[in-house]
Amino acid sequence: MYQFKFRLRYYIFLASIVFVYILVILAEFPTEANHTSYCVFHNITGYPCGACGTGRGLIFLRYGYLYKALLINPLSIIVFIFSIVAFFWLLYDIINKKETFFQILNSKINMKFAIILFILVIANWVWNIEKGI
Image (cartoon, rainbow, N blue to C red):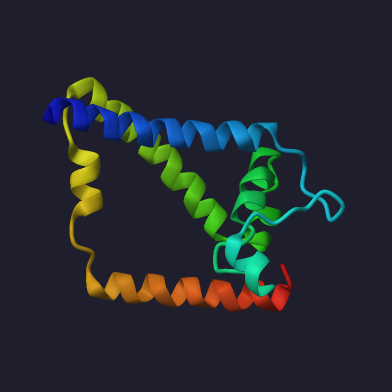
């Protein structure tokens, strides 16, 4: 039973990464004319959340516009790098029948790192509001 849960968790995570990148590949180049927000927070409140623009940033990265991706939402670059690393790390764990990825993910985060991350997300959120995303 444990082996099945282990593999299922890894396959679901891998499938999620692949699915998101299929959506990014199929997406049109973002313009004001074809922009639709799927953010629940933004649609309810009218204000962008701290992650608003991450999807468009990934699409800009797909087209090779690193600067535009950085301007629309710096988190898109972090998400891109994390997803590539996670994809290959998950494949490595599946091939070698290890569970290192989720052990690291489930380990405790240093409080200083968590505070810095929280401040960066709040700063990004304020910046998103100022940009009027």
